[in-house]
Image (cartoon, rainbow, N blue to C red; front, top):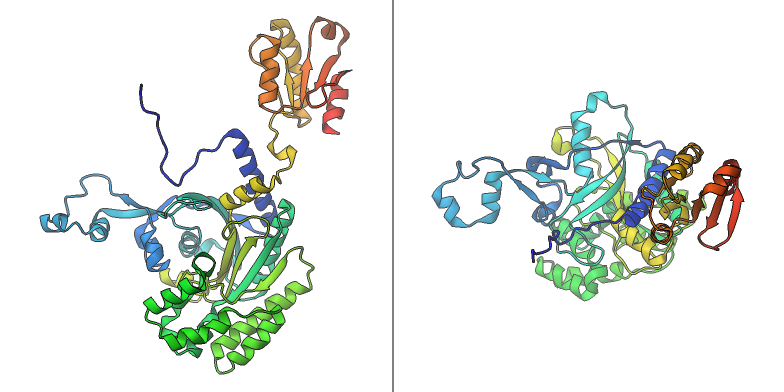
Length: 454
């Protein structure tokens, strides 16, 4: 017996029901983005490695899927290089392209490439898959979708406020309770200055960002491994463990960072965002979280992360400001801020909480039973009328046993079945069976449309 085919670890097939659920997610996010004036773009699945490398930090570079060059890629390699078995060096020789790691860096490349065509500020959204050579685990996949929104060409903190409104609107529509966590890389930079480790800001933020996963002892151990002195690590503890309201945390940090111009600037920006949001009556809570670091090198200001309150899972949305991301492509000084919804994790959350509306997952609304050629011919114009009215309808293609056709309706969870036999054709009526209640009624085509469309 032939071995069954398989799929790569960290990837998934999606059934029609699962796709209906995913499309509900994508469509909801797409509608909210459009509501706030964002326009959609798409970029290629693969980018030049020169575009991707060095943009995500050392850890991110390791997670890039590299694409082998076509043709004789050994031609440019020496025997010595081949025998060295240096994977990273060899890959740099015969891999010129890679699968995109996120949508932000390709977006920055897009802005630079199309700068003359864009009106600034440019508000774009993008819903496409990304790939990471990560270790698969619950809630973490090697291929997954991101749903990004970014604004470039504006320094205004109102952009940050608007993005948090988008987050609140999307999760309110999903019916998911979330906590929107906010911090600022300038505050983290100020903390690094305070403990005398300004040159270690990347190591500090990468370690602190793992607090939820490895705990405070794990973070402290990683900081020590990165060469942070014990005294500096000790100074970090009260900051990492700081509690209280958002205003109380800000007041404490304003005193702690009194000598750091950068740190105070971060507090000022964060205070503006939090105070503005407080006046907008958001549905979900917003929390200043000083342990939030977002371990990506390109963030320079406000950073965001969203956690579901009723499901144990990692971050389901994240983002932040990246004031000079386009500078790496030869366009310095162009500011940007963005968020990314993790569609695959949101999919898992909505599944666990069973929050999909029935109209989002039910495909066909009406199935017409097929009793034979004459009945099928009679049904087709009726079905056409229903479809014109926006009612999803189908005719069972084969004239087969009634039981089989009803089983098909049950398997697809079709709520209504229409039966047309000789009597119905003579009277110009339809027999409609409600598959939930089991009740049967007689109706005209117009009455059926009103019954279903409301």
